Image 1: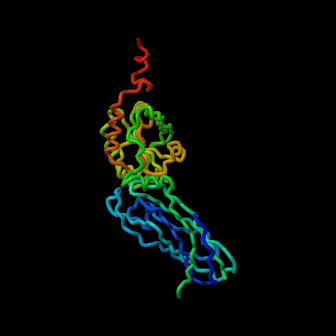
Image 2 (image 1 turned 90 degrees about the vertical axis):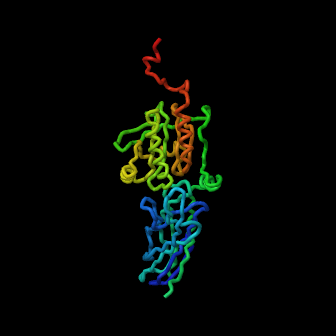
Image 3 (image 1 turned 135 degrees about the horizontal axis):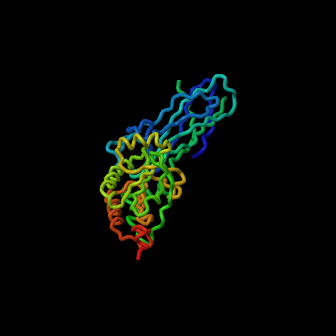
Length: 129
Length: 199
């Protein structure tokens, strides 16, 4: 996993962080709203956001894919996609650098096997102007 | 007002396990890693013993099953391919339990019985299920992918390993071969010690 690039904005501004995710060819991860109750959803949560007030998190539109192990198509994400996280920079934020930290939980499968859910760290570095 | 876009270059690669992932996606058309159907006798290694609890809290060792053919299935409730195999295993248990065969499921769910018990009830699972742990997974080679299923012969040796969903026939063939195999000379006595030692 790579580190976030440094980003910047003014106090009270609404900003978006785009978090690129790449799934290896031949694999898929469940979308944030899986089609079956037993499946583990893709989920981004912020643990510390500093001067950024977290807003909506927008996940990409999933595709409905049919796999050998499921009767019905599953709501999944494959390939490369972005998760878009909205923030508002606090009106009283001090000028200077900071960092927001979060966790992305996912659970991946291929057509014949599944892999234990994993959680990876996500960070967004920022610069308040 | 358009929000300025802050591009955070977080490169999250769902590197589900590099090397194993490679095997899965490159091991032939729709073919999982199939390490062997049933290995020849001399290539089999002893299955590691474990001590895990069943739903009644009873500690279960693999060695409790010595003398039986065992299908040891590592699975989880969130694993779609595992759900395909479970009804097969229920049927194998019904068909072969009288011949010295047993299925043992080892759930790798982090939440343990809280999620596993309702699942077992819903699927009416008729074989013993235990809650696994990292140690058990480790001694069985890591268990990165689910399902991973071991066929263990009557001498407690691993005769086959199947990683991922495989054809039902693969299991049936393996189980039948192991059940039909003559008892190994090095195996524990199949008769009571009283008779084994009698003149």
